[in-house]
Image (cartoon, rainbow, N blue to C red):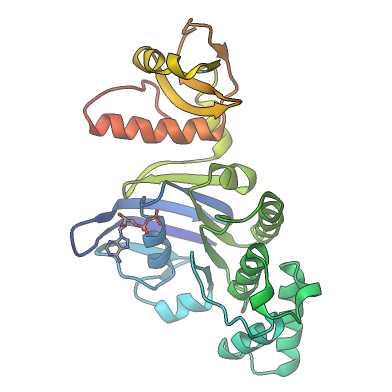
Length: 303
Ligand code: ADP
């Protein structure tokens, strides 16, 4: 399975350029599309899911023209949108059965088999007879995956699935996704870096409608080896550090601030070497782009 996106652009009425000349190839396995809110992720996901038209560009899925052969593509596609409504009065098993009818699975026995299989895959077998209105957020998202897998899609698109899930539910959701991703193309769109570092073998970073980076997360992290430094400081020290160093991130920690900076040699100032992680790659990539946009140069070696 291969999804090839070339030169995709989309501007909304009103002038927001949601996608600017995006080109990207995605192969089987879990692919993470990472970007802050407003980056253009949902727009890209909806266009791939044949629900929206781009202004220009092409998308091919294993030789099928996604923008022209929508009907054929929909047969290969499962989609879990960012928000989806569920009738609270219906049970999980009844709704899946109903959706399976709509998918064209006419045989009652085949439907039962398929629904059983999907409920098991989504870890919902024990809750199959419960009404969806009593499902927790995590159960609803797992139900969302089960419905997206109806008809055995070859490409699964999952838009911001873990926002609002508690840590345990997120792990459960990740496990289900990575199992699915062994056989088909799964695109996971998210603004949560840990979603990508936990489950995705390949990834891209999108920001302000532009694709900024597309590579294996481990390789991307490796490019920053030796250049990330950390220190815990008092809040008052921050303005000076921000003046003197390229701050990748700073976050509160026990009432003080954990700072990570980028520097290609020992920065002094009491900083210790740190192991780079995907968050460093993400923040640095976005920062580099914004600085370039503002005409400043902050980052020599690129990610
Ligand atoms: P993300 O999913 O990364 O948060 P979106 O694709 O939803 O990003 O949005 C990208 C940009 O396009 C944002 O600036 C958003 O406000 C704008 N946008 C999204 N949908 C519409 C729309 N229907 N009409 C106008 N602007 C939109």
